[in-house]
Image 1 (cartoon, rainbow, N blue to C red):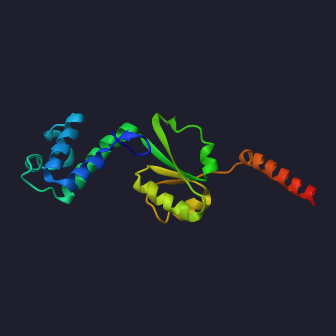
Image 2: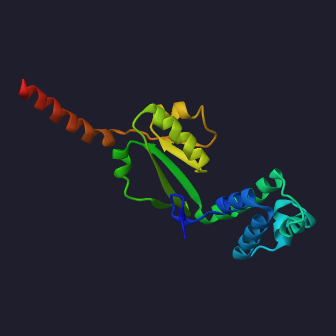
Length: 189
């Protein structure tokens, strides 16, 4: 089976439903039935949770009615909520590849929540803006990035952003490396 997404989950429900919707009413009906069966969701529960009348769901499942876009959105939103609750929180980190390579943990347990880290490597401001928009499209719950990037991308996206605070203990080692470079340049002259 083809792997989808950065978490290497099997095809996600969103992809399944959209692909089936684009093919035919029959494919959509079969796919929706399959998902409902896999997730142990009755037509009654789907109706209660989405607000879609049982009669409408029956017509969709029996292929006697074309599905409206608003109904499709409602169904997808419901399954996304279910799917999302199992993976807890996804945080996007926008940083240079060098910085991201130094992050050893891709999953954390914080305040009782499983937090998954999704990396967005960038090398310039334009990449950072594009990555922020991509992260929002990927449905991350929030973004961590450098302060200068945070001030810019908050104008483009509507998810929480936190910037990395640089502290003295984090800057001593880079200053030490810089001094070594400066001294080596001085000795070359």
